[in-house]
Image (cartoon, rainbow, N blue to C red):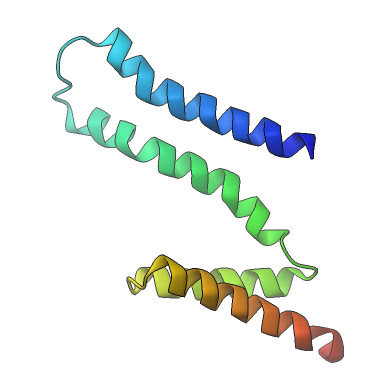
Length: 104
């Protein structure tokens, strides 16, 4: 349980530093498109890197986690809403969890 608080604190610190350091260290507008895009995507990449391991360990079987993740990716790339993606991926993982013990 303590690891969860550590992860949340680390994510908050990283996100804050990425947003606050450019404001305090750089006084003029950033004109480099590379630096601007880097600063824009870093919080999303950090969140994804911290979320992905939790996705794989969320269920009893790795297979159900992977299938739920694949369903979520397919729906997200097809621009479905967050609720549809979350419900469908949870449902897919749940259905696989129901039947997988009988298959194995």
